[in-house]
Image 1 (cartoon, rainbow, N blue to C red):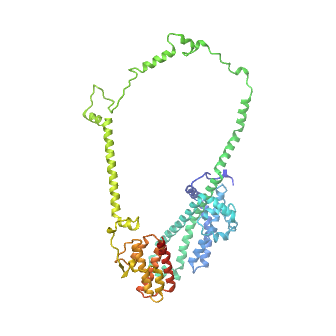
Image 2 (cartoon, one colour):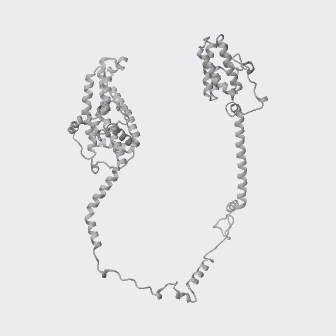
Image 3 (cartoon, one colour):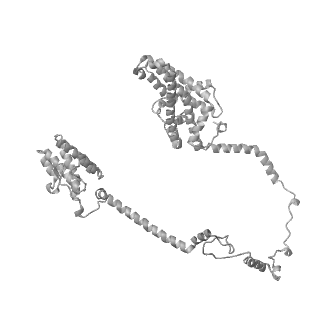
Length: 517
């Protein structure tokens, strides 16, 4: 592989620019690529259709599954054409058997559905790598181009489907109207044996779509591979050094001649004569002899500076207010100009603006405090229940309900150890045991968690309020207990003994810890 023989510019590109380069490569060699693809795939499609005439869908599936083997021939043509060695049609077909043998089983099994198939193929076919070396090489190459290769496959699948559906629609419009009107639902579903030829014809349209698209797909994956190798191996820098070497070799005789002329000894008479020593009579105004004159250079410089600091060369004035610079005493400003000059008076105006800014700041902070107070008052019930639980005097708390679903939920009418009492009642009175546990749960939710339960609430609404407490264990226990209580109370289905142990253990795990805390 000689980089200097490449038919494209070797330089680092973005992934999307590399895909454009692949499209241009496919267009440049479109005739050879499409002809070779058709010469290989159409006979395979015809053979599969004849062998599986009664199963046209299976024939199309097998033809589609063999695509990784078809793609090796376009890559072989592109890899040679890139460096100026364009193979002929017959040479391409002769090389096909040797291209199919390496790693054909892997290409048709676990690698078949890879989304980076066109990007991975050059590593296998051009570099001849397999196994661990191939995986490591693909990891290195795919660090920056793997996503673009996957998107290429995804877009290619949709493009194939769109082109195929377009050709099927064209075929439908070309069919005679009498034939279309005689179709039945069985014909449309492919159940009629007399219409198999039409399904094989639609499969042929898919094979024709691949003749156009697949060379482009392979060329785009190959260009991504070349771009990634250019980035990793600095092919562009290598080419620059080779061009520089060629230029230097061409200019080497001229450089040697120039160096020999520079090293040739010159005559001493050609050297310039040394400069004469400076003459004191030609010294400038800084010379020592001029300092004895009545007007020395230093005195003249000082006198010139004093003259430049005086009018009309220099006029200094201190201004402490805004004014119009173009007005003079003879030209009095108009009314608008006087008004603007008054408004721009420095001291009083800025003092007024500072007071106005302070007043606006006070108003803004007051408005913010009122908004916060209004929000707290508006959502005081939610904050008391699910937020920080704002404490109010006992006289302002709404009265808690004493009965829910006909059950007494006051703590005074419940035993101290509800789980032990439920275990004692379970053998003879399972309904009363479940009712005791459910009453205890409602009482805890009312008095410990301050849930705003009402007599009009249903069991499902109570479970929703429990979930809003964001306590996973309590929510699971309440859901399990409610389900068994509904089965017992409304369906008269007794819970098994294992449910008793589960519910009592869950009660102790939740509320025994609450009691100890």
